[in-house]
Length: 492
Picture 1 (tube, one colour):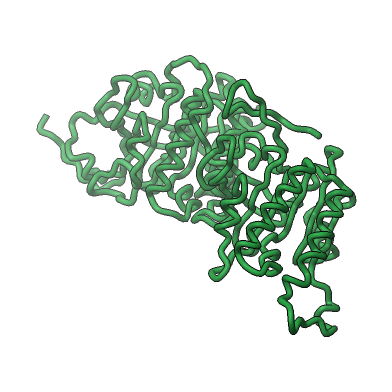
Picture 2 (picture 1 turned 180 degrees about the vertical axis):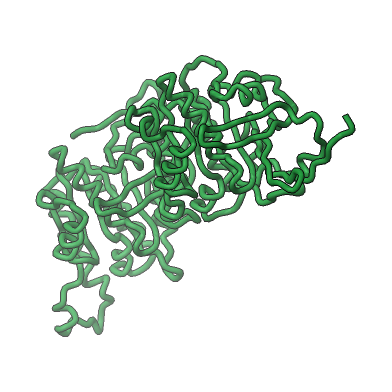
């Protein structure tokens, strides 16, 4: 039997663990299930309870353990057929098929004198007992255990039966997963109390979710974690816990490669900080962020860009046209560009994508373009956006990664907006770009609103994107009212 150990409860006592077969779920459970205990898997129909059980059982057979599936509702043939479509090999999984047979409906099996539970309970219990004693399984999956409720004369007898059933399995050395079919008339509260832990499958604003609200004897990672059902079964994406990650790095200014921009920033962006580049559409936000990546590529650093609102092909074509050689950067491994479809990726899955780039590919700069597209993926409110962004940014800062967030504001001219959503407090630096009308011509300016780690230039400079790249002029000290979008020349 393969297992891992945990010392969350007592540093002197190791706890035998069994993998659930789902990496993300094992992470949430701090290693997996505690051996020789029973766990309730609950959720609405279609949330993936049986699939979770298939992961659990097949992981056991792969480790030369004995796995037993006690199916009380679905036939073995149906289970095997459905499992095959997801790639599960159940050849070495033992079954105890107690699902209703067609003969019951075809024949006269009514009970005129005795309740059905009185007639069927003892043979069924004997069949389970014999099978468990024969196999002595390491892992047992019962789906759904609530079917036994209908074979009990009352709630007291049902609870007594379940407790004795769990004790039997524990004495045989088995670790048990069991599912329920809770209804309004027959809730599963009693089963939650009797289990050693509860795994809940459900739905959140971002899609399918999974959590472990109860787990005796060990800590778990709290929260609603993301989950999806794929062609290969369940995939779980745990909530990012930034405090668990840390990496030493050298604090230094990162140059943009444009002297005037560096002057505005007192040398550049500080490594390991979060920068919001904000402005209205078409002003050059993405280009400004990419310029930092271009300069980083010259130092041999690796940057990652996540496009939530623009296609990869459009970004590549536009960047090449203004002398940012993104194609060569990708070929040399200094730039990774990933186009993200917001409605198909949860915040937890996205955080895992970012972690891979940081921990496996040594990313130095991460750019999210843009915040509105990221928020769309949440399908939630602004508070949820800030919560997920806060965790992701904190993780990246702890790892010494420089973060660039592109945020589009709605006002082309007129009243000044720093950011479109309430993320200003997340930013160590805010760089803004604005359109303005000057002598009947549309022009652009760039400025710095905030830098936590150093002083910065408080003037505005004219900003232009040419075929040669970004061009920034001298400070516009003779203009006032620039942020209103209608500047005027001063007498000086």
